[in-house]
Length: 410
Image 1 (cartoon, rainbow, N blue to C red):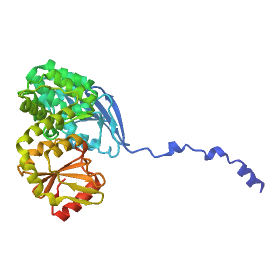
Image 2: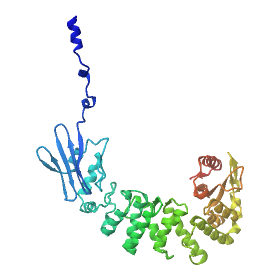
Image 3: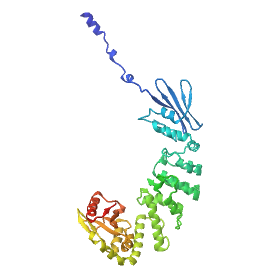
Image 4: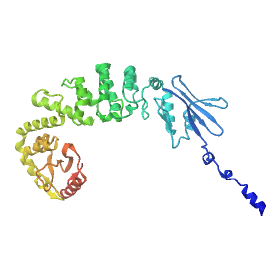
């Protein structure tokens, strides 16, 4: 018994203390960034048996995979590059100093092969010019047009900003200006753009799908008969509009701006104010003046046309449909809701379409939503500042449309 007690006493607590962290199984594959700079990087991939390095030296035009144990060299191909990166399934390698890449993912193989296999793209890399991952050659035409300007623009814009809203969308405009007015004017726009508080500037939605297209809306304005001053217009869209409440300047503004210039020319015989302090108001007031002038010739038929759709008036679910009978009602509607319904006076008078008002049942005199009826179809519905209809308004219109056999296409 005494021997057993002595044996027990000899057991030490230290015998049972182990390093749990050290005991954890280490990952079978490890990646390590060996080198990175503006254009180049070397990435090491290590397993229990193999250690290889991916060497991408854009500055030297060298691309290969080296076996660290036996020194064997394999050229970089899409196949072995995919194999090298295959274990980056749920992670990525951050490349903070490689301007053209930024990070390595499992899916980066195609992009690397595209860039390293294209002399123009590697030239852009060497000048620290951004390259689109989705469409690597997206900006090649502008690079080839003026390398020096593109490099300056890339340096001027915030890091990686050419992938985002106003910078990405303005690249075609910058290079159209360069081709038409010269590099100094193009840089003026780029510099003002960086200073501007506008979050997004979009000249033409087609650029998202076709990067080779010209910024049509900007081109039409600058090539119009209205003699728009380039620098004044750049300041207007970058700063004046922001002060007027434009967080974004989209293709809708540029279309309305051309409409505004055209209305002034038609009404006054010339453009009296090219850069209004309150564009939305100026546009709508100008539209109203045009409409009222037209109404003098057209309004004799307005009441007759309104009578044809009088039976469409309706009331239910807290809303009602009102049929305007005088041109003035359309003009008032346009002013109250800040849109251009007054422009439809002549179209209503000629029978081309009808304008109806959606109002709250307890406030039938207060403007709410304007409806355009073409045939038996509601094709437009706009509230204050061209807002769309709410779910409650849509529910009411669907019920009314069902009873009147009118399609609600808004």
